Length: 88
Image 1: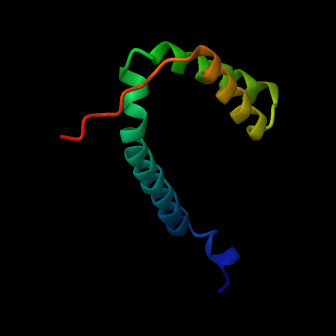
Image 2: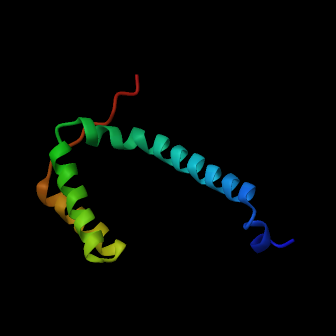
Image 3: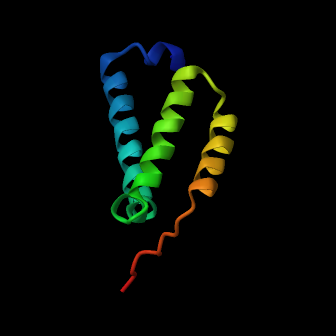
């Protein structure tokens, strides 16, 4: 059997779905340490503005590279400083 035939079995689809869910949770859990200062800090307003602008650009159909460039520009214009999390 080839992979294209195996994918049609429900148990294989369930296994793939669980694998994707686990991988997504692992990525979010490891990214949380990096995102935490931007969610809890005084720069939350800047972070929210950048997320809203990026979401609007996605809806408008702008390419991801342009969204990243514009988000970096908005972040630079709004300024602000984030202190690194305490590792003690």
